[in-house]
Length: 580
Image 1 (cartoon, rainbow, N blue to C red):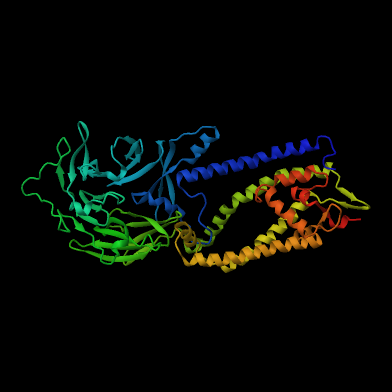
Image 2 (image 1 turned 90 degrees about the horizontal axis):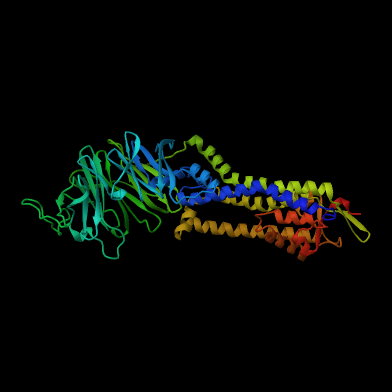
């Protein structure tokens, strides 16, 4: 039988090892891709096909800047990283490349700029100057060439003052926004920004975050937005107060303003009103320019999972709301990107699962940017489906290589005849057993899949993912729970049907089509109990149906072509018409 020939077992094991190398290498590469996906924060696969979200790269825009009307994204240079890992190398500091993306069309192009020697980089655009801040290194694009810089402050502190890069950051000891400038002797903290009353700017001890100053530089004008714990202030231009060598403020000269904590407006700062916004639910506030005028986006109700954006415009005297938009369910990260000239700003909302949505603020409201036109929808779905199923398909094909070799060896060397008493049968070949199992799996899987697809053809998969991620209630959660329960019951009924019909008649749909039958080694019907045992053991010996090499090797190396489930249940699989 299978192990009666000298060297047969050695040949089977050697071929199995040799032909498993491609699949092993494939899974190694997939593992690296998953690892660098987690490290780089970029999605490995597109969004769920049919959900309508074909612009997943917008999730990157939560960290991007707008430069010359293109999104600037800094991403890991995966080709270099993979090449280095393939040679056994590994570095904590990665290689990075800069990509420019057109917001409207989604068309991307490589800038040719490469950054290296750091664990991450953040992008900052100040006026028309493009800066890159790493944890150890900084760079600036000068005349379209990346050059090293030595900024001693974080990227969100950068500003242009007197045509030079400076930094404005919160000083916890002084409790002031301190200005750092380059002087002949080096970088010096020489002044602080005069801001609204301290009781409005400062946070309680246990409150998260610190006051953040965002400045939009246009020509020689600075539009300053100060975001505090629960207020957003605006000022056209900045007022500075010098500090001495010990960092203490120098008293204001005669005629300069003094602080008045009772005024909502102080030293030119105005408070962005929130009459139409729930003040207790405000979590995000952003300043920008709209039609050349100061504007602001305030987002409330974020913690409920149903955020609403309110867009305000300043006419020089007062703020008024000009547009509002309910963002997609689960949106919890927002970004406002100011464009050049009088072009309306972009608003990017990213959900908890990393799916991004981009909008343009245009009268009379928000316009969502779609990267796929009406005629491209099916092409996008088809492309997403191919990407989703390409990796499993390749894995299955590669895993069949050892099985094909084992099947040929068994046909050439082993004897398929089996006898018990006066009866004789032919044992089932490996190929037909595999085909029968594939047919059974297709029947079990495709029927619930077809039923579920009909029920959920218009289902909002993205909202379901968000409700699970955020642990918030949403109607899709109840619908999915109901459908899942029904499909599980259908799956159980199908499986029990296969077990019962195999126990009573020795066949399943796949075995019937392939001319096979399951019997006891005594060539009697196997019975329902033994049928159940061999199917339960299949899950264990294939490692939850992932790796099929163990059962294939067991079939090849046992006299009665039995896998582990057959050995435990004392069953064999035979050709139906061979019984005599």
